[in-house]
Amino acid sequence: MSVENSGDPSAEALAEAAGVFGLLASPARLHIVWALAQGESDVSQLAERVGGALPSISQHLAKLKLAGLVRSRREGRRVVYLADDPDVVRVVQWLLDRRKGEMQEHGSPERRLSGSVGDARGFGA
Image (cartoon, rainbow, N blue to C red; front, side, top):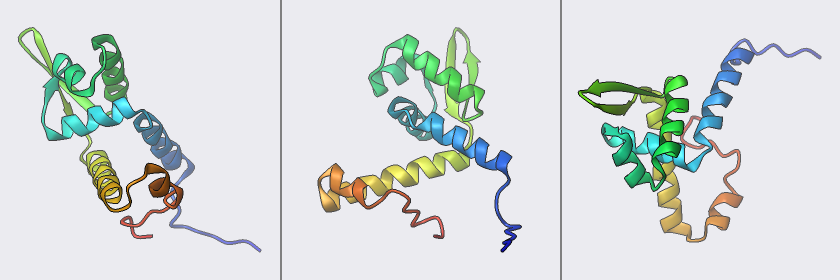
């Protein structure tokens, strides 16, 4: 029995999306994208906000920039970073807002996460 799903994403699109989710699987990178969604920032400000060392934050920014999720511009001697993919920013904001609401509603992280793996409510599922 052959089932044709012409609406399925291509293998290339799935691999690209998995790559983005892989990048965002790091709490530090997720925090950086969230912070940059609130407004532009330089490495020092991000390191202070995210709580990481400058070299570590710089490496995270380089990976995010290479993936097209973040861009930078020079202001004199200072390099300013900003979120560069509004769709990814919306997904990150949605996920963090949803988790914040569930945390307030249910309390324990174990309880929240146990029933949510594969749950895509809010994305038309």
